[in-house]
Image 1 (cartoon, rainbow, N blue to C red):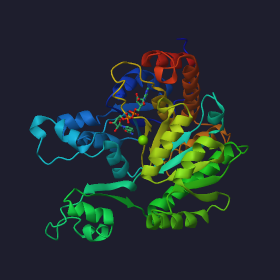
Image 2 (image 1 turned 90 degrees about the vertical axis):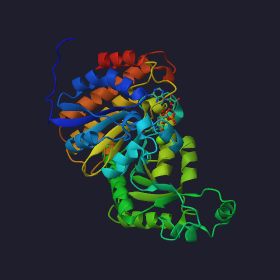
Image 3 (image 1 turned 60 degrees about the horizontal axis):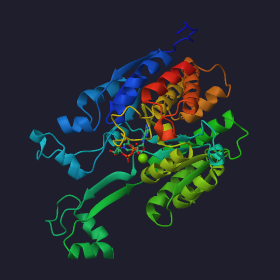
Image 4 (image 1 turned 120 degrees about the vertical axis):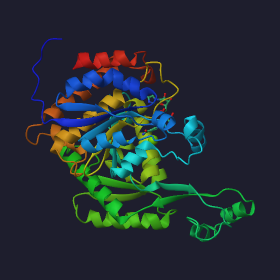
Length: 419
Ligand code: NAI
Ligand code: MG
Protein backbone atom coordinates (compact mmCIF):
# COMPACT_ATOMS: atom_id res chain seq x y z
CA UNK A 1 0.00 0.00 0.00
CA UNK A 2 1.09 3.57 -0.74
CA UNK A 3 2.00 5.51 2.36
CA UNK A 4 -0.99 7.74 2.83
CA UNK A 5 -1.62 10.96 4.68
CA UNK A 6 -3.13 9.91 7.95
CA UNK A 7 -5.14 12.42 9.96
CA UNK A 8 -4.04 13.02 13.56
CA UNK A 9 -4.89 9.89 15.49
CA UNK A 10 -6.83 11.59 18.27
CA UNK A 11 -6.68 10.87 21.98
CA UNK A 12 -5.44 7.49 23.16
CA UNK A 13 -8.32 5.10 23.86
CA UNK A 14 -8.45 1.73 25.51
CA UNK A 15 -10.95 -0.48 23.71
CA UNK A 16 -11.92 -3.91 25.03
CA UNK A 17 -12.20 -6.40 22.18
CA UNK A 18 -14.49 -9.36 22.90
CA UNK A 19 -14.50 -12.00 20.13
CA UNK A 20 -16.92 -14.34 21.95
CA UNK A 21 -18.34 -17.48 20.32
CA UNK A 22 -19.23 -18.97 16.95
CA UNK A 23 -18.59 -16.57 14.07
CA UNK A 24 -17.29 -13.96 16.57
CA UNK A 25 -13.64 -15.05 16.63
CA UNK A 26 -13.59 -15.49 12.82
CA UNK A 27 -14.90 -11.98 12.33
CA UNK A 28 -12.43 -10.49 14.81
CA UNK A 29 -9.46 -12.36 13.33
CA UNK A 30 -10.30 -11.05 9.89
CA UNK A 31 -11.00 -7.48 11.06
CA UNK A 32 -8.45 -6.76 13.76
CA UNK A 33 -5.69 -5.32 11.54
CA UNK A 34 -8.16 -3.20 9.60
CA UNK A 35 -9.60 -1.69 12.78
CA UNK A 36 -6.13 -0.99 14.15
CA UNK A 37 -5.31 0.76 10.88
CA UNK A 38 -8.50 2.83 10.81
CA UNK A 39 -8.24 3.92 14.43
CA UNK A 40 -4.54 4.22 15.27
CA UNK A 41 -5.31 5.81 18.65
CA UNK A 42 -7.08 2.69 19.85
CA UNK A 43 -5.30 0.21 22.07
CA UNK A 44 -7.20 -3.07 21.61
CA UNK A 45 -7.37 -5.27 24.72
CA UNK A 46 -8.63 -8.79 24.13
CA UNK A 47 -11.03 -10.24 26.70
CA UNK A 48 -12.87 -13.57 26.97
CA UNK A 49 -16.63 -13.75 27.13
CA UNK A 50 -19.42 -16.16 26.28
CA UNK A 51 -20.47 -19.76 26.11
CA UNK A 52 -16.97 -21.22 25.88
CA UNK A 53 -16.08 -19.49 29.16
CA UNK A 54 -19.23 -20.87 30.76
CA UNK A 55 -18.53 -24.43 29.59
CA UNK A 56 -14.89 -24.50 30.68
CA UNK A 57 -14.91 -22.22 33.71
CA UNK A 58 -18.54 -21.98 34.82
CA UNK A 59 -18.57 -18.23 34.31
CA UNK A 60 -19.40 -16.53 30.99
CA UNK A 61 -17.82 -13.26 32.14
CA UNK A 62 -14.59 -14.08 34.00
CA UNK A 63 -13.29 -11.59 36.56
CA UNK A 64 -10.34 -10.56 34.35
CA UNK A 65 -12.85 -9.54 31.68
CA UNK A 66 -14.68 -7.29 34.16
CA UNK A 67 -11.29 -5.79 35.07
CA UNK A 68 -10.51 -5.06 31.43
CA UNK A 69 -13.98 -3.60 30.81
CA UNK A 70 -13.63 -1.40 33.88
CA UNK A 71 -10.31 -0.07 32.63
CA UNK A 72 -11.47 0.74 29.07
CA UNK A 73 -13.16 3.69 27.37
CA UNK A 74 -15.46 1.45 25.36
CA UNK A 75 -15.89 -2.14 24.21
CA UNK A 76 -16.36 -3.91 20.93
CA UNK A 77 -17.98 -7.36 21.00
CA UNK A 78 -18.42 -9.70 18.03
CA UNK A 79 -20.95 -12.41 18.99
CA UNK A 80 -21.89 -14.70 21.79
CA UNK A 81 -23.90 -17.88 22.22
CA UNK A 82 -26.58 -18.22 24.87
CA UNK A 83 -28.52 -21.43 25.42
CA UNK A 84 -31.44 -22.45 27.62
CA UNK A 85 -31.03 -23.81 31.14
CA UNK A 86 -30.93 -27.54 30.26
CA UNK A 87 -28.07 -27.14 27.77
CA UNK A 88 -26.28 -24.83 30.16
CA UNK A 89 -26.08 -27.63 32.73
CA UNK A 90 -25.34 -30.37 30.17
CA UNK A 91 -22.45 -28.56 28.46
CA UNK A 92 -20.76 -27.42 31.66
CA UNK A 93 -17.39 -29.09 32.35
CA UNK A 94 -17.92 -32.33 34.30
CA UNK A 95 -16.26 -31.15 37.48
CA UNK A 96 -18.51 -28.07 37.59
CA UNK A 97 -21.85 -29.85 37.10
CA UNK A 98 -24.20 -29.96 40.05
CA UNK A 99 -22.23 -27.29 41.91
CA UNK A 100 -25.08 -24.82 41.88
CA UNK A 101 -23.70 -22.59 39.13
CA UNK A 102 -26.37 -20.88 37.03
CA UNK A 103 -25.86 -19.42 33.60
CA UNK A 104 -26.81 -15.81 32.98
CA UNK A 105 -26.47 -14.27 29.54
CA UNK A 106 -23.13 -12.44 29.56
CA UNK A 107 -24.37 -9.57 27.43
CA UNK A 108 -27.28 -9.02 29.81
CA UNK A 109 -24.81 -9.07 32.70
CA UNK A 110 -22.63 -6.46 31.04
CA UNK A 111 -25.59 -4.25 30.15
CA UNK A 112 -27.01 -4.39 33.65
CA UNK A 113 -23.82 -4.20 35.69
CA UNK A 114 -22.35 -1.36 33.61
CA UNK A 115 -25.74 0.33 33.36
CA UNK A 116 -25.72 0.53 29.56
CA UNK A 117 -29.32 1.62 29.45
CA UNK A 118 -29.72 2.72 25.84
CA UNK A 119 -29.39 0.09 23.15
CA UNK A 120 -29.08 2.18 20.00
CA UNK A 121 -29.90 0.31 16.81
CA UNK A 122 -29.86 2.51 13.71
CA UNK A 123 -32.05 1.44 10.79
CA UNK A 124 -30.26 3.44 8.14
CA UNK A 125 -29.99 2.13 4.62
CA UNK A 126 -26.38 2.08 3.52
CA UNK A 127 -27.24 0.85 0.07
CA UNK A 128 -30.57 1.70 -1.48
CA UNK A 129 -31.79 -1.32 -3.31
CA UNK A 130 -35.55 -1.12 -3.00
CA UNK A 131 -38.17 1.40 -1.98
CA UNK A 132 -38.77 0.11 1.53
CA UNK A 133 -35.06 0.30 2.29
CA UNK A 134 -34.90 3.75 0.75
CA UNK A 135 -37.65 5.03 3.01
CA UNK A 136 -36.32 3.47 6.22
CA UNK A 137 -34.16 5.95 8.06
CA UNK A 138 -34.80 5.83 11.77
CA UNK A 139 -33.19 4.71 15.00
CA UNK A 140 -34.54 2.30 17.57
CA UNK A 141 -33.43 2.82 21.16
CA UNK A 142 -34.25 -0.20 23.21
CA UNK A 143 -34.34 0.07 27.00
CA UNK A 144 -31.54 -2.23 28.03
CA UNK A 145 -31.58 -2.64 31.79
CA UNK A 146 -35.14 -3.35 32.87
CA UNK A 147 -38.41 -4.41 31.17
CA UNK A 148 -39.30 -8.00 30.43
CA UNK A 149 -35.68 -9.19 30.55
CA UNK A 150 -35.25 -8.06 34.16
CA UNK A 151 -36.17 -11.18 36.04
CA UNK A 152 -37.47 -14.54 34.87
CA UNK A 153 -37.70 -17.49 37.21
CA UNK A 154 -39.53 -20.57 38.35
CA UNK A 155 -41.84 -20.07 41.31
CA UNK A 156 -41.24 -22.38 44.27
CA UNK A 157 -44.00 -25.00 44.76
CA UNK A 158 -47.17 -23.25 45.89
CA UNK A 159 -47.28 -25.32 49.07
CA UNK A 160 -43.64 -24.65 49.96
CA UNK A 161 -43.26 -23.27 53.45
CA UNK A 162 -43.99 -19.57 53.63
CA UNK A 163 -40.89 -17.47 53.82
CA UNK A 164 -39.25 -19.12 50.81
CA UNK A 165 -38.19 -16.65 48.12
CA UNK A 166 -41.00 -15.21 45.98
CA UNK A 167 -43.62 -17.09 47.97
CA UNK A 168 -45.84 -14.07 48.17
CA UNK A 169 -46.10 -14.05 44.39
CA UNK A 170 -48.44 -16.99 44.50
CA UNK A 171 -51.01 -14.79 46.11
CA UNK A 172 -50.46 -12.27 43.29
CA UNK A 173 -50.64 -14.66 40.35
CA UNK A 174 -53.05 -17.15 41.91
CA UNK A 175 -56.02 -15.02 40.93
CA UNK A 176 -55.40 -15.84 37.31
CA UNK A 177 -57.37 -18.88 36.20
CA UNK A 178 -54.57 -20.32 34.03
CA UNK A 179 -52.27 -20.33 37.02
CA UNK A 180 -54.90 -21.94 39.23
CA UNK A 181 -55.25 -24.76 36.70
CA UNK A 182 -51.47 -25.18 36.62
CA UNK A 183 -51.39 -25.40 40.39
CA UNK A 184 -54.09 -28.07 40.38
CA UNK A 185 -52.02 -30.16 38.00
CA UNK A 186 -48.86 -29.58 40.03
CA UNK A 187 -47.12 -28.22 36.92
CA UNK A 188 -44.33 -25.70 36.97
CA UNK A 189 -45.16 -22.03 36.97
CA UNK A 190 -42.55 -19.49 35.86
CA UNK A 191 -42.84 -15.73 36.06
CA UNK A 192 -41.22 -12.89 34.12
CA UNK A 193 -41.27 -9.51 35.75
CA UNK A 194 -41.54 -6.43 33.57
CA UNK A 195 -39.68 -4.08 35.87
CA UNK A 196 -40.51 -0.55 34.77
CA UNK A 197 -39.27 2.56 36.53
CA UNK A 198 -39.80 6.28 36.16
CA UNK A 199 -36.03 6.74 36.51
CA UNK A 200 -35.30 4.26 33.71
CA UNK A 201 -37.82 5.76 31.34
CA UNK A 202 -36.95 9.37 31.97
CA UNK A 203 -33.32 8.81 31.07
CA UNK A 204 -34.32 6.77 28.02
CA UNK A 205 -36.79 9.44 26.85
CA UNK A 206 -34.09 12.12 27.26
CA UNK A 207 -31.64 10.10 25.20
CA UNK A 208 -34.30 9.70 22.51
CA UNK A 209 -35.16 13.40 22.44
CA UNK A 210 -31.48 14.36 22.11
CA UNK A 211 -31.07 11.83 19.35
CA UNK A 212 -34.09 13.25 17.50
CA UNK A 213 -32.68 16.78 17.80
CA UNK A 214 -29.25 15.63 16.57
CA UNK A 215 -30.79 13.80 13.62
CA UNK A 216 -32.73 16.91 12.70
CA UNK A 217 -29.66 19.14 12.93
CA UNK A 218 -27.80 16.79 10.60
CA UNK A 219 -30.61 16.49 8.09
CA UNK A 220 -33.44 19.03 8.44
CA UNK A 221 -34.97 17.82 5.17
CA UNK A 222 -36.00 14.46 6.53
CA UNK A 223 -39.75 13.92 6.06
CA UNK A 224 -40.35 12.68 9.60
CA UNK A 225 -38.26 14.65 11.97
CA UNK A 226 -37.92 15.34 15.69
CA UNK A 227 -40.44 12.69 16.56
CA UNK A 228 -40.10 10.04 19.25
CA UNK A 229 -42.47 7.06 19.01
CA UNK A 230 -42.99 5.07 22.20
CA UNK A 231 -43.81 1.51 21.08
CA UNK A 232 -45.52 -0.35 23.92
CA UNK A 233 -48.62 -2.33 24.93
CA UNK A 234 -50.50 0.15 27.12
CA UNK A 235 -53.88 -1.56 26.76
CA UNK A 236 -52.59 -4.89 28.06
CA UNK A 237 -49.61 -4.20 30.31
CA UNK A 238 -51.50 -1.36 31.91
CA UNK A 239 -49.62 -0.48 35.07
CA UNK A 240 -46.10 -0.69 33.68
CA UNK A 241 -47.25 1.21 30.59
CA UNK A 242 -48.69 3.90 32.83
CA UNK A 243 -45.28 4.38 34.45
CA UNK A 244 -43.70 4.62 31.00
CA UNK A 245 -46.23 7.16 29.82
CA UNK A 246 -45.90 9.31 32.92
CA UNK A 247 -42.11 9.34 32.67
CA UNK A 248 -42.08 10.16 28.96
CA UNK A 249 -44.69 12.91 29.33
CA UNK A 250 -42.60 14.58 32.04
CA UNK A 251 -39.51 14.52 29.81
CA UNK A 252 -41.53 15.76 26.82
CA UNK A 253 -42.03 19.04 28.65
CA UNK A 254 -38.25 19.56 28.64
CA UNK A 255 -38.19 19.21 24.84
CA UNK A 256 -41.05 21.26 23.38
CA UNK A 257 -39.54 21.01 19.88
CA UNK A 258 -39.81 17.20 19.88
CA UNK A 259 -43.12 15.42 19.23
CA UNK A 260 -43.71 12.32 21.36
CA UNK A 261 -46.31 9.77 20.24
CA UNK A 262 -47.52 6.64 22.01
CA UNK A 263 -48.27 3.68 19.75
CA UNK A 264 -49.08 0.01 20.09
CA UNK A 265 -45.93 -2.01 19.48
CA UNK A 266 -47.65 -4.51 17.17
CA UNK A 267 -48.89 -1.70 14.94
CA UNK A 268 -45.42 -0.16 14.95
CA UNK A 269 -44.07 -3.53 13.77
CA UNK A 270 -46.45 -3.45 10.81
CA UNK A 271 -45.73 0.19 9.95
CA UNK A 272 -41.99 -0.44 10.04
CA UNK A 273 -42.56 -2.69 7.05
CA UNK A 274 -45.37 -0.88 5.21
CA UNK A 275 -44.47 2.75 5.93
CA UNK A 276 -40.99 2.97 7.48
CA UNK A 277 -40.62 6.62 6.50
CA UNK A 278 -43.05 7.68 9.22
CA UNK A 279 -40.51 7.02 12.01
CA UNK A 280 -37.64 9.07 13.36
CA UNK A 281 -36.69 7.64 16.78
CA UNK A 282 -38.54 4.66 18.29
CA UNK A 283 -38.15 3.72 21.96
CA UNK A 284 -39.34 0.46 23.48
CA UNK A 285 -38.80 -1.74 26.50
CA UNK A 286 -36.28 -4.56 26.39
CA UNK A 287 -38.18 -7.45 24.76
CA UNK A 288 -40.29 -5.30 22.45
CA UNK A 289 -37.21 -3.34 21.38
CA UNK A 290 -35.31 -6.57 20.75
CA UNK A 291 -37.99 -7.83 18.37
CA UNK A 292 -38.60 -4.49 16.62
CA UNK A 293 -34.90 -4.01 15.99
CA UNK A 294 -34.63 -7.35 14.21
CA UNK A 295 -37.43 -6.20 11.90
CA UNK A 296 -35.31 -3.09 11.42
CA UNK A 297 -32.32 -5.28 10.56
CA UNK A 298 -34.47 -7.01 7.95
CA UNK A 299 -35.33 -3.64 6.40
CA UNK A 300 -31.69 -2.70 5.86
CA UNK A 301 -30.51 -5.95 4.34
CA UNK A 302 -30.35 -8.44 7.17
CA UNK A 303 -28.45 -9.18 10.35
CA UNK A 304 -25.13 -9.12 8.52
CA UNK A 305 -25.45 -5.33 8.26
CA UNK A 306 -27.12 -4.31 11.53
CA UNK A 307 -24.88 -2.60 14.08
CA UNK A 308 -25.68 -1.45 17.59
CA UNK A 309 -24.38 0.27 20.68
CA UNK A 310 -25.14 -0.38 24.35
CA UNK A 311 -24.66 3.05 25.82
CA UNK A 312 -24.52 4.29 29.38
CA UNK A 313 -23.26 7.41 31.08
CA UNK A 314 -19.85 5.92 31.91
CA UNK A 315 -19.20 3.24 29.30
CA UNK A 316 -20.46 1.92 25.99
CA UNK A 317 -20.21 -1.47 24.32
CA UNK A 318 -20.74 -1.82 20.57
CA UNK A 319 -21.79 -5.06 18.87
CA UNK A 320 -23.57 -6.39 15.81
CA UNK A 321 -27.26 -7.14 16.35
CA UNK A 322 -26.64 -10.72 15.21
CA UNK A 323 -25.66 -13.67 17.39
CA UNK A 324 -23.00 -16.35 16.99
CA UNK A 325 -24.65 -17.95 13.92
CA UNK A 326 -23.80 -21.59 14.74
CA UNK A 327 -25.28 -22.66 11.38
CA UNK A 328 -22.39 -21.04 9.48
CA UNK A 329 -19.65 -20.87 12.15
CA UNK A 330 -16.27 -22.31 11.13
CA UNK A 331 -16.84 -21.89 7.40
CA UNK A 332 -15.21 -18.49 6.98
CA UNK A 333 -18.27 -16.97 5.30
CA UNK A 334 -19.71 -14.78 8.06
CA UNK A 335 -20.42 -11.22 7.04
CA UNK A 336 -18.15 -8.93 9.07
CA UNK A 337 -19.99 -5.76 7.96
CA UNK A 338 -22.17 -5.43 11.08
CA UNK A 339 -19.08 -5.75 13.27
CA UNK A 340 -17.13 -3.17 11.26
CA UNK A 341 -20.11 -0.82 11.30
CA UNK A 342 -20.28 -1.31 15.09
CA UNK A 343 -16.62 -0.27 15.26
CA UNK A 344 -17.54 2.84 13.26
CA UNK A 345 -20.37 3.57 15.70
CA UNK A 346 -17.92 3.20 18.56
CA UNK A 347 -15.56 5.74 16.99
CA UNK A 348 -18.43 8.13 16.34
CA UNK A 349 -19.56 7.79 19.91
CA UNK A 350 -16.10 8.44 21.35
CA UNK A 351 -15.18 11.06 18.80
CA UNK A 352 -18.49 12.91 18.94
CA UNK A 353 -18.27 14.61 22.28
CA UNK A 354 -15.72 12.52 24.11
CA UNK A 355 -18.40 11.92 26.71
CA UNK A 356 -21.00 9.22 26.96
CA UNK A 357 -23.59 11.30 28.73
CA UNK A 358 -26.38 10.43 26.32
CA UNK A 359 -25.92 13.83 24.67
CA UNK A 360 -26.52 12.79 21.11
CA UNK A 361 -26.08 9.07 21.55
CA UNK A 362 -24.00 7.50 18.75
CA UNK A 363 -26.19 7.85 15.69
CA UNK A 364 -26.95 11.43 16.57
CA UNK A 365 -23.29 12.16 17.09
CA UNK A 366 -22.36 10.72 13.75
CA UNK A 367 -24.87 12.89 11.99
CA UNK A 368 -23.87 15.94 13.96
CA UNK A 369 -20.28 15.20 13.07
CA UNK A 370 -21.04 15.04 9.39
CA UNK A 371 -23.55 17.86 9.61
CA UNK A 372 -20.89 20.48 9.89
CA UNK A 373 -20.77 21.86 13.41
CA UNK A 374 -17.10 22.65 13.54
CA UNK A 375 -14.29 20.31 12.52
CA UNK A 376 -15.13 16.62 12.79
CA UNK A 377 -12.68 14.75 15.03
CA UNK A 378 -10.11 12.31 13.65
CA UNK A 379 -12.23 9.41 14.90
CA UNK A 380 -15.33 10.80 13.21
CA UNK A 381 -13.48 11.15 9.91
CA UNK A 382 -12.04 7.66 10.16
CA UNK A 383 -15.47 6.24 11.04
CA UNK A 384 -17.06 7.88 8.00
CA UNK A 385 -14.32 6.45 5.76
CA UNK A 386 -14.74 2.98 7.23
CA UNK A 387 -18.52 3.14 6.87
CA UNK A 388 -18.30 4.18 3.21
CA UNK A 389 -15.73 1.47 2.49
CA UNK A 390 -17.93 -1.19 4.11
CA UNK A 391 -20.85 -0.24 1.88
CA UNK A 392 -18.61 -0.28 -1.17
CA UNK A 393 -17.65 -3.84 -0.29
CA UNK A 394 -21.30 -4.75 0.35
CA UNK A 395 -22.03 -3.76 -3.26
CA UNK A 396 -18.93 -5.15 -4.91
CA UNK A 397 -18.04 -8.23 -2.85
CA UNK A 398 -21.09 -9.45 -0.93
CA UNK A 399 -20.93 -12.44 1.41
CA UNK A 400 -23.44 -15.33 0.98
CA UNK A 401 -26.04 -13.82 3.37
CA UNK A 402 -26.29 -10.90 0.91
CA UNK A 403 -26.52 -13.15 -2.13
CA UNK A 404 -22.80 -13.17 -2.97
CA UNK A 405 -20.00 -15.66 -2.53
CA UNK A 406 -17.21 -13.70 -0.83
CA UNK A 407 -15.52 -15.09 2.25
CA UNK A 408 -15.08 -13.06 5.43
CA UNK A 409 -11.44 -12.44 4.54
CA UNK A 410 -12.24 -11.41 0.95
CA UNK A 411 -14.85 -8.97 2.19
CA UNK A 412 -12.40 -7.37 4.63
CA UNK A 413 -9.73 -7.17 1.92
CA UNK A 414 -12.21 -5.31 -0.26
CA UNK A 415 -13.02 -2.87 2.55
CA UNK A 416 -9.32 -2.21 2.96
CA UNK A 417 -8.97 -1.54 -0.77
CA UNK A 418 -11.94 0.83 -0.70
CA UNK A 419 -10.39 2.83 2.14
P1 NAI B 1 -28.06 -15.35 14.82
O1 NAI B 1 -28.07 -13.88 14.67
O2 NAI B 1 -26.81 -15.93 15.34
O3 NAI B 1 -28.35 -16.03 13.39
C1 NAI B 1 -29.58 -15.84 12.71
C2 NAI B 1 -29.40 -16.14 11.23
O4 NAI B 1 -28.67 -15.07 10.63
C3 NAI B 1 -28.59 -17.39 10.96
O5 NAI B 1 -29.09 -18.03 9.82
C4 NAI B 1 -27.19 -16.88 10.69
O6 NAI B 1 -26.43 -17.69 9.86
C5 NAI B 1 -27.46 -15.53 10.06
N1 NAI B 1 -26.41 -14.57 10.40
C6 NAI B 1 -26.27 -13.90 11.58
N2 NAI B 1 -25.18 -13.14 11.54
C7 NAI B 1 -24.60 -13.32 10.34
C8 NAI B 1 -23.42 -12.80 9.72
N3 NAI B 1 -22.62 -11.92 10.35
N4 NAI B 1 -23.14 -13.21 8.48
C9 NAI B 1 -23.93 -14.06 7.85
N5 NAI B 1 -25.06 -14.60 8.36
C10 NAI B 1 -25.39 -14.23 9.60
O7 NAI B 1 -29.31 -15.74 15.74
P2 NAI B 1 -29.73 -17.16 16.34
O8 NAI B 1 -29.44 -18.24 15.38
O9 NAI B 1 -31.10 -16.96 16.83
O10 NAI B 1 -28.82 -17.34 17.62
C11 NAI B 1 -27.57 -18.02 17.62
C12 NAI B 1 -26.90 -17.79 18.96
O11 NAI B 1 -26.57 -16.41 19.12
C13 NAI B 1 -27.80 -18.14 20.14
O12 NAI B 1 -27.02 -18.79 21.10
C14 NAI B 1 -28.29 -16.80 20.64
O13 NAI B 1 -28.60 -16.80 22.00
C15 NAI B 1 -27.11 -15.91 20.34
N6 NAI B 1 -27.47 -14.49 20.13
C16 NAI B 1 -26.74 -13.55 20.78
C17 NAI B 1 -27.00 -12.21 20.59
C18 NAI B 1 -26.17 -11.21 21.30
O14 NAI B 1 -25.18 -11.52 21.86
N7 NAI B 1 -26.49 -9.94 21.31
C19 NAI B 1 -28.07 -11.75 19.70
C20 NAI B 1 -28.76 -12.84 19.03
C21 NAI B 1 -28.45 -14.14 19.25
MG1 MG C 1 -32.21 -9.84 19.17
